[in-house]
Amino acid sequence: MQPHPFRQPAERPAAPPEEQRLGRLRSVHGQRRHAALFHVARGALLLLFTSIIGAVIAGWQGFCLSLPFGIAGFAVLAAAALRHRGLRIELYEHGLVVARREGLEAVVFDDVDEVWFDLDRSSTPFGRFVFLRAIRLVEHSGQRRTVPVEVADGQEVARRVLQCCSRPLLDEARSAVKEGGVLTFGPVRLDAEGIAIRELRVAWGELSLVRLQSGRVALFRGQTVFPWRTVDLDSVPHPTVFARLVTERAPRVEHDEVWAAWTG
Image 1 (cartoon, rainbow, N blue to C red):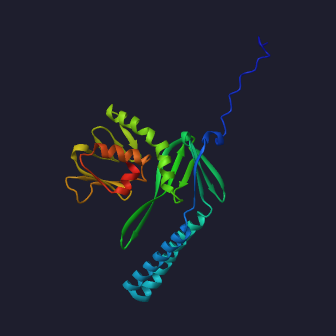
Image 2 (spheres, rainbow, N blue to C red):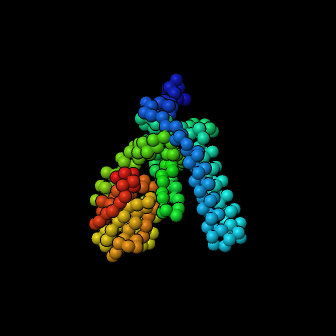
Image 3 (cartoon, one colour):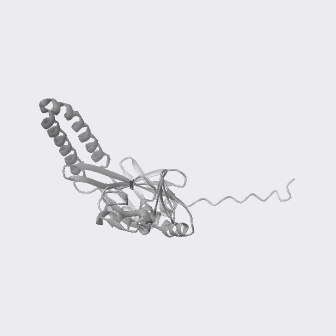
């Protein structure tokens, strides 16, 4: 017989609901004006471009062969426009809510373990363009969330996520490298002496240039024309922390203003 049968084990206090953990509302970001029209216009241009190229190369036969690919690209971009109809991001002090037609999805920043970029790469006759389409979050529980930033003032949404989920890790990462630790970012490992991409390693002093542009970090060795290796920023977790650590160790750095704003 228990000495004190009237005593019950203490119950663990329930965690507060996500609504309370989010804190106060900071801002609401709806769908951009004419966002759907923008995606449809991109699809139409892609359809037109592929059709013209096919016709120039092989006449009517080339036109007929390239037409299905252009239609497929148009369909993909048009579907993206429809998928974002009704999209709204509510930005809170300690998290955010993604509102879609299917329902609401809440994310508390303290629950986030990894931050990933979702980049949109577009090649046109005028050059190659890379845009930040969304931020993908992995929580400590393994749950994956996607936060689209193609909303009104989406840069503010992205900056807030990076400030709360990645920025606090930077000082800890710097200290770890300084104390001789090795940090792993997906296929990349770096330490105080150098950086390794899969099985290939180079010392920081052997790099002639690190160039940050178009959603990637290009590492040059011995010359500054052809990169020794490149690392896409959507292939590593916490890409802003990774880019900052690399640029701080590199002997020479070049970057464009757009991506410097994201990673600086």
